[in-house]
Picture (cartoon, rainbow, N blue to C red):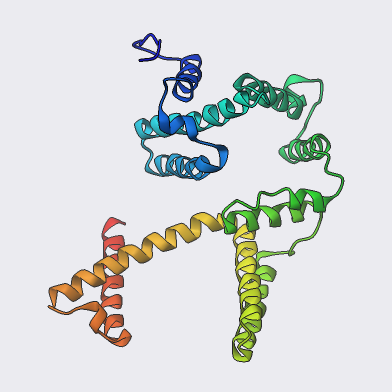
Length: 273
């Protein structure tokens, strides 16, 4: 057993100490062998669970999931401390300095008269501190590990700052039509690499349109997927009730139940209005 005094209430210092003990001599065999690479997917998973707690408006769950994310930060920091690179305190110091530098209108003498002016100052400071000399640098700095729709929307937003953007949502939607035609032509030719390229262009155009309409493309697709699953479940229940098996039916037969499911969902919406 390690030397640790249990308490009724713990602080960030206790969390740092617990992680040190878990990875130290006499600690947990699993924790001791973990690396940045072995647990990096856990960071993504924990972050997604925070988002889910926010979507559910569940404060107790959010508190728990934020703790899991904080553990990831402390754990990765501990690995770096063991390698004599940096500590958790260094992480805190760096983010504090960054916030102070990027908010000169709060911590300095800069005056801003509008939200647009504030955001322009933010972008300018960010480019300077990150050593970004061109707008292309700002696009390249968007993390490739982001979900594809989220990354595409962020790249489009940064391109807009350089003046490269559609004039309106209508122009963006027209691009969807043009890209759809190019995809259809690629499908006819049957070149899989060309098809993949044109599909990407079509999706990117959809993301740009979402941005112009003030819609989060990632959230929009998430909601559409949830809606599909719900409608699928209703259709399957209707099929089962009729003593049939979905995987033995034609798509035309399934469509009958799919439309019934849609009517059920629409009637529920009408009842709630």
